[in-house]
Image (cartoon, rainbow, N blue to C red; front, side, top):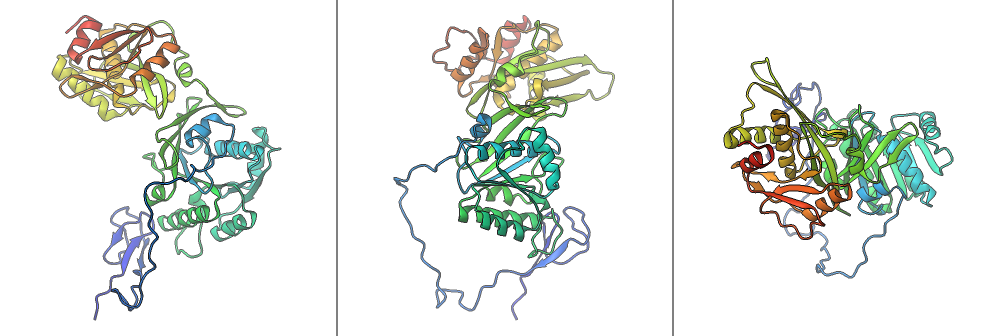
Length: 454
C-alpha cells in the first residue's frame, strides 16, 4: 500500500511537520497544527489520456503599449507607485500601528475619486462611523468614496464583483476570514487564502486593490512571506512617533523603480506632501557643532540630504553602549572596528550614540564616510566644515570606494547651498557644477586632512 503523503502545517506560522503535535516547535503555539491533504494526482500520472493544455508561447519582442496609469494628484504617492496606479495591480501597504496607514489610504482614495475613479473603501478594523469621523477631520466628507465595513471575504468579493470599482482598499488583510479555511482570522492560513483570492480577483477584473498589512515587532509584514510575492507592489509607511515626518517607501514594484520614497508631514488635518525633503531634514541645522555630518544620499531616483548626528561620551560600563537610530547597527560596528584597526583611533570605554535627524532611515553603504565623519567629529570635539557634504563606502581595509549617481548627489547639495564635497579619490564625477571637490583615498588620510590627526 502506498505511503500517505499528508502533511501537517501550523496555522500560526506556517511551519511544516511530519506528524501531528500539540505544540508547534517553530513558534511555540498550542493546538495550531492541522493536517493538509496533498493535491490529488489522479489516475493518469504520465503522458496518458489526461494531458494538459499546451501553453501558447511568444517571443520577447513586443509592440504592446505600457500599461495605462491613473494619477491621484498626490505627487508623493504617485511617485512611489511608479508614476501612477496601474489597473489590475495589487499593492500591499505595511507599517507600525498608528503610523497613519489608514489616513494615507483614505486621502489617496479621495484623491483618486475626485479625479473620476470609482473608489471603494472596505474597513475590517473600524466601523463605518469611525471612518466617517476621520474623513470629516481630514476634510474629505464630500469625496465620492463608497464605504463599507465587513470581514467576510466571500461578501467582500461579491460586493466588489457587483460594484466593479476602479480602486478598492481593504483595511486590513489580517482581519479577513474565509469560510473555506478552518483557522482564526489573522492566522497564516487565513491571510494566505484572503490575499490569494483578492489578488486573483484584481487580475481577473482589472481592479486595483490596496491591502493594508500589520507588521511584526521586527518591522516585517505579519503573515506568510508568500503574500509579498503574490502582490505587484510592497510599500512600507515608516516614521518615528516623536517626529512629524512620514516616509512612504516601496521595497518591491513590478511597474516602477523599487526603493522610491515619498515624504509626508503629519499635521492636524492629515498628511501633507513634502516637495523638498532635503530642505526639511536639514531645516534645524544651525551653527556648526561637533558630531554632525551631512550625507548626500539617493532614495530610489531621488537625491535626499540628511544629517547624521553622533555623540561620543566616556562610559562607566564594562560594555560601552552602542545606540543607533535610523542606521544599520551592524554597519556602524564595522566602521568603528575599521577606525580602530586601520586608523588607530580607539572607541573602547566610550559610549557611542548615532542618529539620523528627522526620523529618516538610511540603508546605503554610501553613508559610511558620513558616519565615520560624524563619529570622528564627536570624538575629537571638532566640527566638520559646515558647507561640506560627504558620501563614500568604506572597505574593511580602510579604503574609500566610489558610489553611484554622484552627479545627482552633488546637484542636490549645491541647490541647498553646499559648496564642498568630500568623496572617494576614485569617484568619477562629470560636471561638479562649481562645487569644490576634496578627494580622499582612504580613511587614514581622511582623518589626517579633515581633523589634523593620523
